[in-house]
Length: 314
Ligand SMILES: [Ca+2]
Ligand SMILES: [Ca+2]
Ligand SMILES: [Ca+2]
Ligand SMILES: [Ca+2]
Image 1: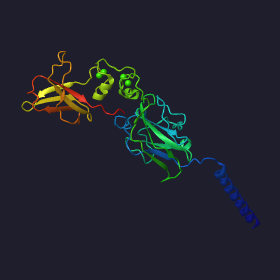
Image 2: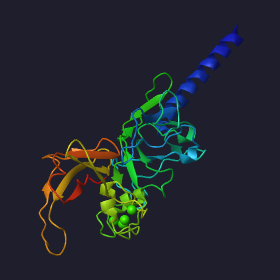
Image 3: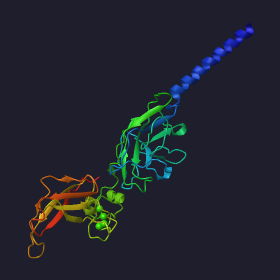
Image 4: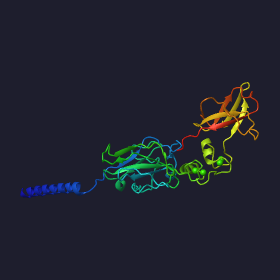
């Protein structure tokens, strides 16, 4: 009997010691690293600066997928990266996963339908409670190839769990910010946009078609291909004496058609042009546009030209 009592006493003492130890950890053990996995990700589709969904893992290897990086917001602030996309020192990078990088199309837990991503943070990657973070997505698989980025909201790890996980849903709609808004060659295109288009940021005429890089971007032609430039492609007869003017267009761009019957030579240095496509811009809904000019063939010899409305530059 005495033996049993002694055992119970010892056990109670040990239980008390265990409580003290646990209390000690809570009081002195520093930040609490949640012991459950954490997933962070998007449920909306993130698009690039042209409105095209970022490349995810639809059968592609991860190396083809666009880059995702998690950063610390050390004082709850997001700072702009440098011209090459490297983060501000006040936004250091969270240790990447052991298998390399996070990317668009990666999957973790219940998040990440096609075209989005989620990252699973567990073990040493799992940030401590009260960590303040944000996520940056890029428009290319590597920082060296990227030119635009988009940021999530700043969020705080709070340790809460739902069905065994802490889940943070991010909102990143677009890689809307250029790393480099300078215009080295003064052709009207930002350096970052030239990188996205493949044109030379130090040369206003990247190819030899004499149409400059900005004009080619406005018209939607290829600034790296001398055989691609904006032309009025065709004029044909429509109903009766209707003239039908056609050109290669870009969906969403706005156009006007102008006409003059002046000779466009040295005998008339100030030709008078009039708009014949109506009072409003015409928005293209595909890659070919045609517009009928009533009685266009009855006005004799003349010239048409197409004007493109420059869109806002990303
Ligand atoms: Ca430029
Ligand atoms: Ca250029
Ligand atoms: Ca050109
Ligand atoms: Ca061209």
